[in-house]
Amino acid sequence: MARYVFITGGVVSSLGKGLASAALGALLQARGFTVRLRKLDPYLNVDPGTMSPFEHGEVFVTDDGAETDLDLGHYERFTGVPARRTDSISSGRIYMNVLEKERRGDYLGKTIQVIPHVTNEIKDFLSVGDGETDFMLCEIGGTVGDIEGLPFFEAIRQFAHERPRGQCIFMHLTLLPWLAASGELKTKPTQHSVKELRAIGIAPDVLVCRSEQPIPDKERAKIALFCNVRPEAVIPAYDLRSIYEAPLAYHKVGLDQAVLDAFGIAPAPRPDMRRWEDVMDRLENAEGQVRVAIIGKYTQLEDAYKSIKEALTHGGMANRVGVHVEWIDAEIFEREDPAPYLQGIHAILVPGGFGERGTEGKIRAAAWARERKIPYLGICLGMQMAVVEAARNLAGLPDAGSEEFDHEAGAKRFTPVVYHLKEWVQGNHRVERRPGDDKGGTMRLGAYSATLADGSRAAEVYGGTKIEERHRHRYEVDIAFREKLEEAGLRFSGMSPDGRLPEIVEHAGHPWFIGVQFHPELKSKPFAPHPLFADFIRAAVETSRLV
Ligand code: GLN
Image (cartoon, rainbow, N blue to C red; front, top):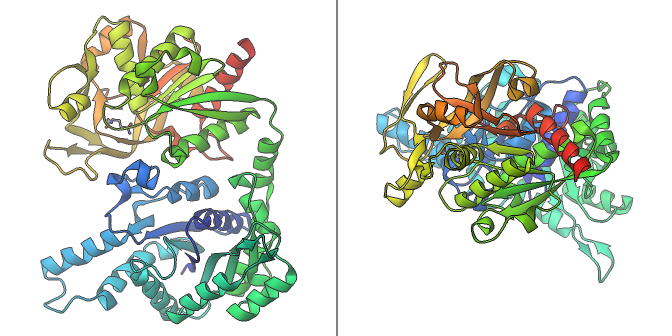
């Protein structure tokens, strides 16, 4: 049976609950334990798949094809444990399950209520895979007191109550605001937040207090006394230079020790922090900096490209250089010459996206990178636009485009070199889509393997010819145009195992131009940078030496 840590937040949102959870996971691993992290989100969307990136940041995709909250990305980046569909749940999904059971008659005519039906559904979710790991860390989204979150809080209270004593603990994150006028840290919001938790039957074992100022011992003792938490379990959390400092920083202030103490695990196994020391060494002792432009649509909200941003940082760590990201709205290139914006840029990345807006700008960015021999990494839509660019400008198909944009506009304007796929093979079975299928989850989602051509740049970068990467898209490059495009110099260097779906394209004769139909950024980790990102940054370093 796993030991459970429930992580909740109070006072305000955005305190870094996800990061604290991920860092705790990394610290328990450093002491030799196995961990799995889970996210419970109170919102009513069934999953974040249909939420705008402006609203919710990036959608993180798991190997088994779930569209999840970006916190699962943090979990993976810190622990290296691949997240699963069963590691993410929302109120919407819980209610949907309950209502489906009700319709099927599974409740035998009973009145369906939040307690016990909804809370039971949540507890069943928490129990999945219970026997597989030493620790299960479950983060509850939102803050204590939110109406939507109540069933989750009630469910974790019951869950802990039903398990043997000492099997579950509660960790609560709060904020200590600093009042500059009186020069004081205020503990009252924390006291209130804990009071709120205790009112619903949850007594925190560990309190993590975010603060911009050092927390004096006197205040720590006061929090401990008023909140009924041991003084050693009041953990200060200060602002960090980098998120990757979190494991070392939390270790230094005793978070992992406090958690192990709360479980009564003594003596605690000694931690091996070398992985994180190396990560920080690479970050802090980087020499020089490369400038990478991300030409996207959601550039006002960096969280929309969270994993890409992190993967670029990892690529920098692999080469011991800093990576400066220049965010450029693709639409600008539809009105203006890219040159002044891309002057002094060492590499260009065009990320994934949906819809036509900004795509002509992305195509111009791809042309610019190809012509000027600037390293280019196109991800998903960024690959599709690189193919359109080559079709239009090299293969004599001036009307080349994606069927996605014609569907959106309800008009036929393009030669569809990228078309809507309605049937494909995943593992041993066939998946089919009809045009009228509802939006949620109707994509090629999750891990698919690909075969790389011998002697291609892709095979060289990966150091092999068999790969597996995560997908999230509806449209595919059409192999009907393969011959024409290859003659024009765009090599199809990675294909699905059945040879039908292009997975990687590259321009021969260009120092570094690769488009991938999948999302390599989702699998990159600070301690294991993704090979594509590591090599992309290496190429950027080379460009920086030339310009
Ligand atoms: N909109 C494109 C498709 O659905 C690309 C998706 C993406 O970039 N994730 O195929």
